[in-house]
Amino acid sequence: MSFAEYFPIYNKLTAEEQEILSAAAYKRTAPAGTLLHCGDAMCLGIVVIRSGQLRAFITSDEGREITMYRLFERDVCLLTASCVMTNIQFDITITAEKDSEFWIIPPNVYQDLTANSAPLANYTNDVMAAHFTEVMWLMEQIMWKSFDKRLAAFLLEESVLEQTPQLKITHEKIANHMGSAREVVTRMLRYFQNEGMVNLTRGGIEIIDEDALAQLSET
Amino acid sequence: MSFAEYFPIYNKLTAEEQEILSAAAYKRTAPAGTLLHCGDAMCLGIVVIRSGQLRAFITSDEGREITMYRLFERDVCLLTASCVMTNIQFDITITAEKDSEFWIIPPNVYQDLTANSAPLANYTNDVMAAHFTEVMWLMEQIMWKSFDKRLAAFLLEESVLEQTPQLKITHEKIANHMGSAREVVTRMLRYFQNEGMVNLTRGGIEIIDEDALAQLSET
Image 1 (spheres, each protein chain N blue to C red):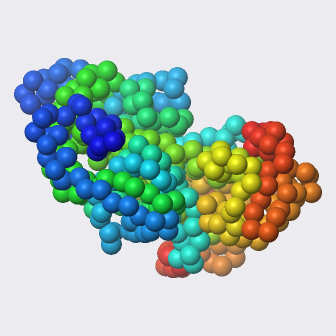
Image 2 (cartoon, rainbow over the protein chains, first blue to last red; image 1 turned 60 degrees about the vertical axis):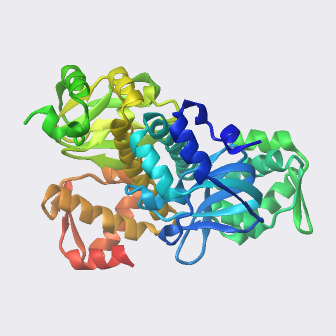
Image 3 (cartoon, rainbow over the protein chains, first blue to last red; image 1 turned 180 degrees about the vertical axis):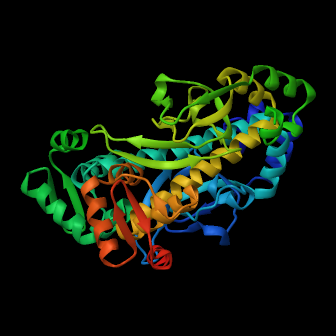
């Protein structure tokens, strides 16, 4: 599969634009854990994901983290090119959460093309609006939903992503996804275990009552 | 002053686009408290503010509120046209916080123009990115800053907006801006009063030690 097949609006661009994009985009692989973007210091470009999983998160001065959103196959990451978006003025960190393969469109190439292409500018808008929506969803969760419901939803989401009820994830990592502290996660997981919803194992969490977790997450 | 002078990229549009925009945009006034947007039920259009102040906020099922951002003279409000932005999938409420005067660009007119105009699509992107940045700033505040610091910053911001240290605002209203409960605001304001930073009066709050509040908000 080629870049053209993975870049969603490739067919809406002019032949000249297609040529410039295809010539400029280059492929890269990144093992899980690779740092792709960190505040203003890095400006990789637009990332078009062929396979794998990226994670966008913010960090506190004390090193706490909270996941804003994740990106999967065929998703496009804009914020890795935030240096060419003057009104994006916040720091976000983006890492490969799994081994990933993607194309990179250099920031200046994308900026130059977008300046003159309504389809590309409108597409950029759509992607930005989708990221904005994910952050607003998270804001609502944080503001109005209690931690037990958020944790239940997180465990179910992980189980769908990993396609298994046997989650291999530490309490520390869950805390980093949720903007919480490890002890808070551990306490709540123990409560879930007492209620028969999960089974805590060495280095993992087994979901044993998916329905109960789903019910809790939806209240 | 005309619409053309208030719409930031009017001069970058073609003569034909300018004509369509000018013909379609209409002026409206809204007294403080007017509801301009509420979820999917309303789709006023793009709002270009001539004077006044708008407030964008989200609400919980129980009626709690938190302010996402405010809009002032010469700002452009996109989310009042969210019906034509397929990837904006969150509910936000927008009201006139002060008596306001603005132009409205009907949603379909804006959508049709933007589909074919790179300058307009890029401008839309810039505005969206600015709103996104404000929400990310708020997310960082909520996640990593304690309530006393956020409240100190809020009081100082209000004092700048209203150009007076004598704030006429209820504890309930502050709670609605900050996503908090009235009692929590009252408790913290009493603490600020004990520390000699504010003076609580009937129906208002007087800032008496701006430096101390500023220092608190910045730690």
